[in-house]
Length: 447
Image (tube, rainbow, N blue to C red; front, side, top):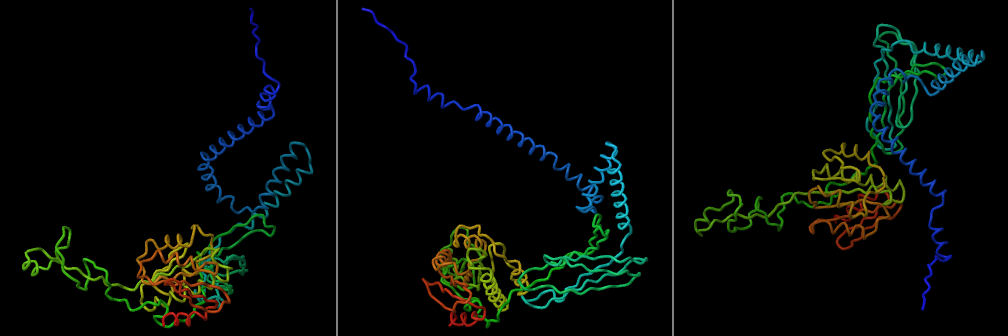
């Protein structure tokens, strides 16, 4: 009996599967090109990082010698060089003539840069602080401090996002020329005026030498505020020196005696009682409190319906905070981007000019308030100002972060809304639609 052995051969389906699993030559080539390109880019980035300090040094050295050339000037220099090289290399007289003509033009333009100015320039803003919509005037004073007359020149003065140009006539030694200008104050901001710079150059705009003569002068455009009655601003009861139920080892209001424990301050040992009982006894005190008001202003663009709603929120915050500062109550004012100074009303109003809408970097209003108040003392009153998109639940979640004896007010800014007060789980929610409603709403809450 014989057995026949046959060799198993792959089926047609298996051969097709193996053929399909192998990458095509084009795919292999594409991956190779991608890897090569990625390697070249990594190499170029490494070279750029190594050579960056060298290029920065070269730029710093050459900048004084080439900074007076404008973009149009560089274009003319490039055309001049190309024309002369091509003209001499190819023997084209037309290109050679064009190159020399442009070179002569550059030489004539360079004559306008010759000379040295001896200006003394001052920028004066009167007043340096205004309320939104107020009148603000500026004055540019230019004096020739040199011993020789100066030719007419142009003086540029950046004001905010615009640049004002003033024609300065020829000045004799010691002669003074001044220019008046108005500063727009339609919106709350810190408007920078300056630096004043003289500009000398040709009429074609190829070469331009600029010299700065002053620094930057700030004009603070404060938000609109409304006057508030004393003490109504912070809704702070007279807590100065008020005794609380909290027990402490060091204060003024005596509470009771207790046995001595290691680490207690021996200055508070009551020696008469200790002698009578035969055991060291120390004093305990009731903690006294000082008024501490904390204001939180939301800058998150998603918290407000529009920019005008945010401006109203800034005005409400500034109105309350300035009155609290005048009352002499301790206050902290924080926003998402900064902690505002509170040592004087003017300082707070100056800082409020720098508050702007911005995308929030916090996951929720609760996380926002938790982060910005983390390093502040525990408040006796917390006021949170936000826009119409915040819900009652948002304010309620913030209340849970605070001590149980903290009074919290949530101010919802909704332009055009009727003034309203709602009490939700111990949180007073104030709705304010116009700035003039703020005093009467605070009076109603205080009563």
